[in-house]
Image (cartoon, rainbow, N blue to C red; front, side):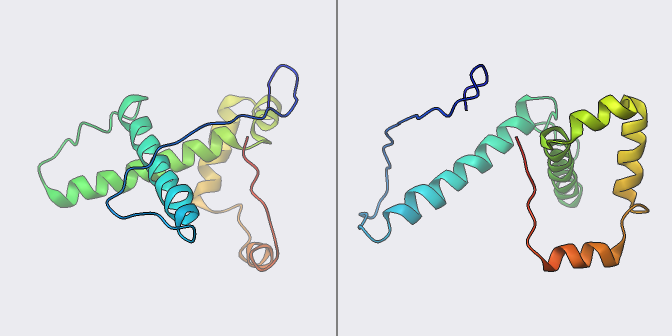
Length: 133
């Protein structure tokens, strides 16, 4: 979508795939669009963690369990940041509450006291949508 005109843009692109096994009409969509593009999303995520403020390239340990724990915490932090900054309702909440109150509310929400187990269970059983920009 064009941010200035709010109109839908049509974009076309060409891709070249290099593979050791030939493609067939039955597997080209799965192998190229679903698998290869999924891998590209993973690489983009790792690149964000390495070059955009997370300092992922510094492992801070030679102990494998510590490195693995650091990796899991990094992924959780990145997920929380992505969900926080991409949620449509977020900007309105920050404007309404102010930054500090919003951060405090976010911290307590992740800790769990605002979550109603029965309500979440009912939502989980029905169809729901998480909208990201």
